[in-house]
Length: 256
Image 1 (cartoon, helix red, strand yellow):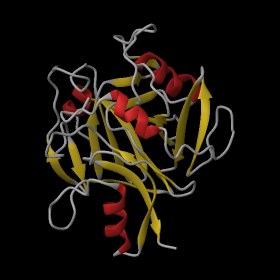
Image 2 (spheres, rainbow, N blue to C red):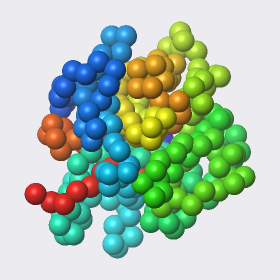
Image 3 (cartoon, rainbow, N blue to C red):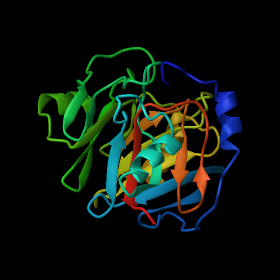
């Protein structure tokens, strides 16, 4: 949960808008695209991205040092560079000033160091992890392992808890938990494909983690948020609205 937590009820109401079923592909997702699929009665939209060919980045501050805060503001800034946002979602937990709660790297510059201590809230529910992008490859690494031997990341964001760790669910998740929220996260498949996913209705951690492991085939997956979860998908015309964001993860391409 972010430090500026928004009620689950409000988030669920916001999520009711713009839900578009793009393709029905069972357990697979088209490359560089999103589709909404059913997982045990819960619709979840998943987007598959190839970091070797798709320009996947993290964004936080504009040229003046202010947080972008929204997909529209980020798109406007990209437009000035003849670029456009294709697929995006909130990319990590943040404080009230929208600064990252955990480790954050943008264009090779570390903004926040790695946090390895246990703490309150979802972020401190160890193990948590770091999503790293470098040289067309993506990894998710448990935070203490990451801190012990830091890789070179062009972009990185730390969040928590880990949803799936080397094929195993987080040990503290309960199948019958009644803590249900609209949640989003990121996973990495064995072949390097990045999967961004957002539940379109409230879901508990155990079910969301199993979606990544069992339906999306990601041996490692990281929770991003459960209070401000939002998705932008230019292909379907979906652009979720709501409170202002901190880090944003997304793909860009040349403007049409």
